[in-house]
Image (cartoon, rainbow, N blue to C red):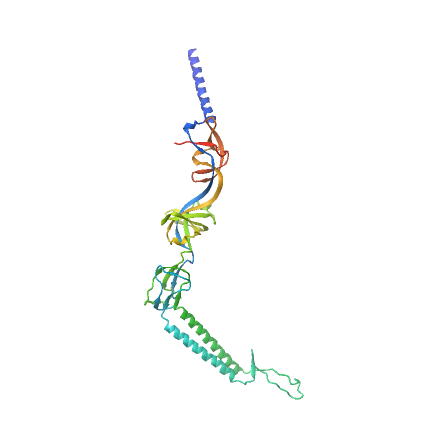
Length: 371
């Protein structure tokens, strides 16, 4: 009998303890002293992607200037670091021979022009109108009783040899004229001008050297326009799906660690760059910062690309959220000091902050379990 009473007592005690545990989990899960508390507050947050990259000239902002003709470099007006403007003369190749060719072509043109005049003057002076068939006689034939009544009569003259001589003279003149234009173009190649405005980045030819222009034009100088730079950011394949053209970007360089430069996503290369089995995609950042000329090509950058910005949304720390099969939950502090388990829905995540879409109000206190 005593054993039975004792067994009933043990069963009752265990049942009471189990009930208390269940009540404690669903009704009073934690005391305030066991949890760190934070308020639900409004905040502006944004999602972002971190990447590394480097500063590069945009297409057309770095130009290698060379020579299209062979000859001795007579003058070189460029030094490394000099700022030059578009069409500014930076070098001259010896050109006395080219000037002589132009003078000879001009003389040949005068001779050809005179030849055309002689060919025309050798014919009847009354020939005044030229046609596709030769020249026309525009004299008057006032004959009594004729059918023309003293009107001017136009008669085409067909003289094959004469027509050939005149056309040959004209063709010779056109050929000489084309040779003159070619000589002038060749002479213009002796004066090398800057195709863009910028800074001289390198000089590879000196005065007195003889350059030979072949399939590859010899490079004189390299010019870079430091106002036309971009950032090539290498984004991991796990993040590239969230990058869109037009998104805002900020980046820093090691030279100015405390200064942020602004830009935006201009293009995303479709082909990946694989290095040591790591897959990245090249994302081009267009720089729109007024201090762009502080930057130099090949500077290393740390880039932050922002997906979107949410202004004035409710946020809580990520550590306050517990994930279960049925959803996401937090512990909300009650007036009694105990914590109540409550289901919530979340939105954007930004760093350690998580947006609360529903389930909490501003000012409520949530608990965070710290290990």
